[in-house]
Image (tube, rainbow, N blue to C red; front, top):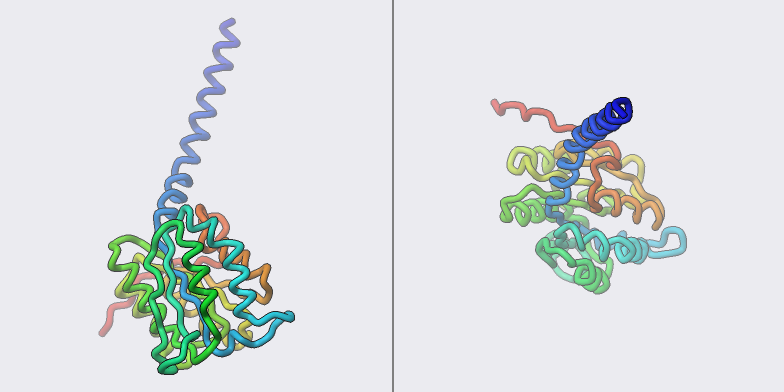
Length: 236
């Protein structure tokens, strides 16, 4: 009997140690799920080109349709688009929806209205997303889906440094969709500067996986190439 009691106590002690070890991971995952998100979606003219037998924008819509209704049940998510409407070529950036839960169908409805057109003012779009998140006074993430580089006079690295200095609680995850390899290092700089991730995708399936990874909760264990933030150098 004494041996049995000792064994039971030992099992209880081991179980308590196991729970203690899991506690920090659970806390981190819970914190991550509290981050608001802004999806920044590229609807510039190049998104109308055909890849794998399908316009890129249609593939992106399909990937979003598969992912957003589920992930937005748990994470407040908003939408900013650039391109996709007639107007000033480099000033066509629009806040479609602020972050909210259960926004998946609303986001999909907005994406369904987009028609590829115009340039790629992604820097203005990312800055607008950061301002929208900052106004909520809560940590947040920006998920940028783009098939090309900024071509409206800005530099992705400079934008990343500015975001890092002004909004240290906001990270940018970049999903490159059918991007040229020569462009990937330049756009990756935006994610590096903000402590986010860069994922290269070349199919509907890989884009779907990237959206799930960056927007789902918890996502700490599955993020690719997470860039740790380093102290910002003092400006002289």
